[in-house]
Image 1 (cartoon, one colour):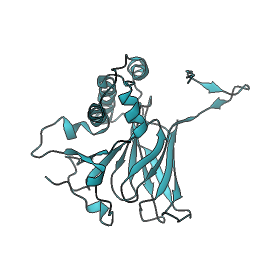
Image 2 (tube, helix red, strand yellow):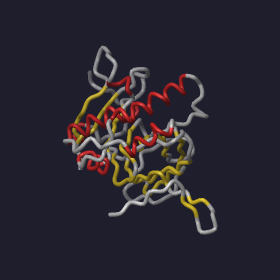
Image 3 (cartoon, one colour):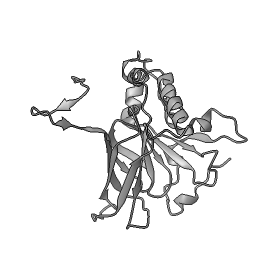
Length: 130
Length: 116
């Protein structure tokens, strides 16, 4: 079971509460056993969908069947360490603007589970420390 | 373990069968966590009673139906509450966990999934 979490802010919505990404233990095991395709397979799909959203045709959008199938047929990249699996997950599941673009402060941090507050009384007011 | 790969599943009479693409059991109380899942790579805690789930693999298009049920509201609170959810993209669905029809709350145990 992974002890890591990823806290992040949306650079376009800094007033929103800080978000916490929790990896699936099952998915982490899959990654560490080497069952993932190259990350570019997911990026290609994300690029196509983002383009459809930007052009206002998301409702009717369908992935290119060849690119879609690569999720299942592309050669696997081999076993990853826990750290590498987490970095892969960040590049797959976090909005790309959080980690691929430069900002005046980091938009995400890898933390341990214990560093995430357990008192959720003011959950909607959580902010990431700079 | 064996894997069956098919494009469509039908009954012997030809009616379509549509299994869930993913399911997840989760908690939002204290620290958010996935207790078990299939087909979900991560949960994102976006705020009180508002997790999103990211799929292992993208759907062909951003259409589908989600469910979200409260297993336990608190550690020993077994009563029904309101819930909702929707598909946001080919890779994510978002759910809303309620304490009633107007207030979001962090459940102790929830179950969610996506049909398509």
